[in-house]
Structures are given as structure tokens and as C-alpha cells.
Image 1: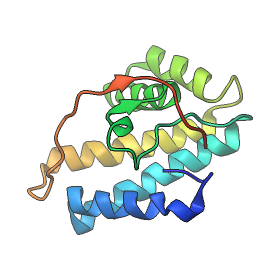
Image 2 (image 1 turned 90 degrees about the vertical axis):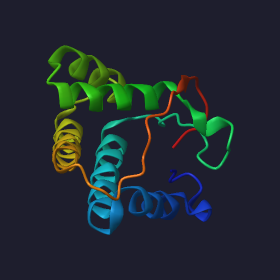
Image 3 (image 1 turned 30 degrees about the vertical axis):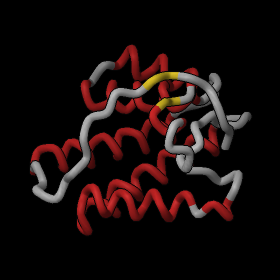
Length: 138
């Protein structure tokens, strides 16, 4: 999902996908939290955020370096792994104050934890293996 090419409507597709995968109740909540994280990160970083083109069927099976740190931080947040959380935050925020971003990430983690605890029946999402690479910017 990119701000760099608004004509791609990637955010709209991401929102629609979250509704398909998580249902009409949880999908919008998770989408909102992800958007808040990305917005907070964009306000903190001085340079662009590398990402994989979500519209490329081949590329979207991989994660760019920054996406990898984003997901690593989210996983660390959910697992209460403070060291990994801080290391990924330093990389993602480029040494800038990560407070706003970490608050947003914490909120996303809580939303996902709540969703996981309820074990919604609508969820079709499957765990996928991801390759790590670099491509794209936001």
C-alpha cells in the first residue's frame, strides 16, 4: 500500500482485503490500526519506507527490508520482546523518537491480540512463508 502512487488505490484494496479476510467488524478496525502505524512511521522517518509492490503477484510473496522490520516489531510487541521491539524501532524510525510509532504499533498489537482471543469464524487468512528482499518506496 503506497502513498507514492495514489492512483493505484492500494489503500482501498488493502481495506477491502481486510474486510474479506477478517470480516466486516474486525477488518476495518485492523485496517485503521495499520494505517495509524504507517502514518506515525511516515511522520517519524526522514526518508522513504521500502516496500514490495502489492499488485505484483510474484513480488508480494516477499518482504522488503523495512517491511521485515515492521513485521518483526509487531511480532515483538505481541510477544513482549522489548529488545527486538526497540532494535526494530531504531531501524524503522532512523534513530528519531519512536514514541508515536510505538504507541500506534502497540495499539495494532492489542487489536490483533483481541481478534486472536475471539478466534473469529470469518477469518480466512493463512500463514504464508515470506522471502525477504528490498524494493519500492513510500
